[in-house]
Image 1 (cartoon, rainbow, N blue to C red):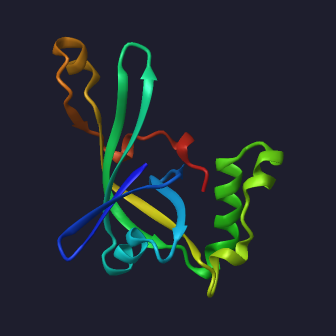
Image 2 (cartoon, helix red, strand yellow; image 1 turned 135 degrees about the horizontal axis):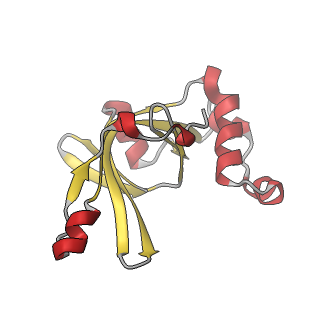
Length: 153
């Protein structure tokens, strides 16, 4: 996803790898604490972002936009978060072993933290409008209609 943060009115966009968690919709990723977007989140939890994919049959490019609040994952949640992130991101155990960083990287003086975005607003492509006149317009999605199948934590 592309994650947008800001500090002192200066916007910043970063590409981060994430997994989706549901009920409420949350997006979990990790990053270096010294990264500009991580420093921005320390100063302001407000974020926005987009997730996109290409190659949808008949559409080419589609995606979603969101706003929300972001926070670093605290120590009491760290072990469970670490395990969940890697299990969801790398379902194959062999691949997961290759990619999993030690949990020590994410605690105390470690260089990384997990971050959790709680989505407050969500927009998707208005497919009906696109099919009618090819206008790339978004429609707000009420978060309470999202399926619970997103929920993994």
